[in-house]
Image (cartoon, rainbow, N blue to C red; front, side):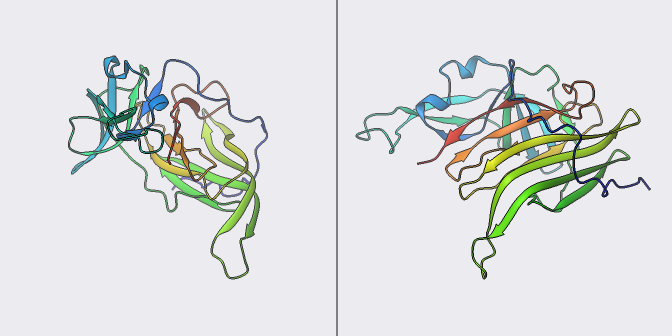
Length: 238
């Protein structure tokens, strides 16, 4: 049985993770404001991460972008400044990905975490392909009130620890000073790029009115790191 890494609490490298850069882009199916979808998005080569009856898989897909009424900014229903994004695949869609050569058609082995929101002082461990991984968070955590189940979190840092090429590495994935009625949420863990190392899709938003799915791939990780943020997409609600 692999040895778990539960004794690791802090990282040696405290630099904040770099924002995604490069050709990778993300979208999800649903409604968006005008500036959240680019006009030529349908011309990109897209892959969807879908969940079917036999599990998760990546599959090349087309997307459809349709102009839609945006009640937040459009003065009347005849104005359609927003976008509806959809794909023809009828299975559940988690995310749409373009511009990343490591993403191709394949079945995807996923990891079921014991929890997807990891508060300061909490740890989640899992094993994938014989390697142990540890997610753990630091920061400040205070109850909103003595009887509340809701915590006010600040100075938050989320780390991932694992052995890579015989070296124990702890990497900072997310760094947030404060939250506004929101919390970092791990949307998906699984081998998206086919290298037997788990990749992560994390909502890195710190605000209740925003969603920022961010994709971390292992094949893009530089030396001494486990993952690299390669693409993200920001959208807001009302």
